Image (cartoon, rainbow, N blue to C red; front, side):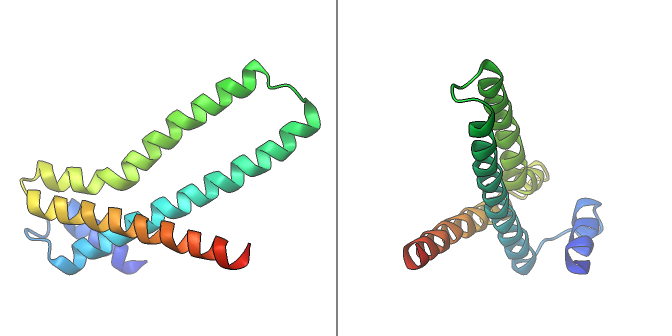
Length: 125
């Protein structure tokens, strides 16, 4: 926790001029794990809401469609922030190679999380 706080403070507020590979890996892996956890929380929430919705009404209502679209828009914004915020910050600071490396690390972490979830599903279900 202290490592993440120091990274945010030192990098985002200009104390450090150069970001080394270890910090880019930490940022990429942290955002990838955060994205996988966010998707997991959303799946659990939607599963719970689906069970609750069947208790109240059988046919879908207009409010349910509105809620789903609103949740979709929020999820896109949250996912975009988790995945692209720090690489965009690095790109704006003219650190394009570091931004690409961080983004690729994030995407690889998300892919590894996907493979991990698929393995758990295949093994236990």
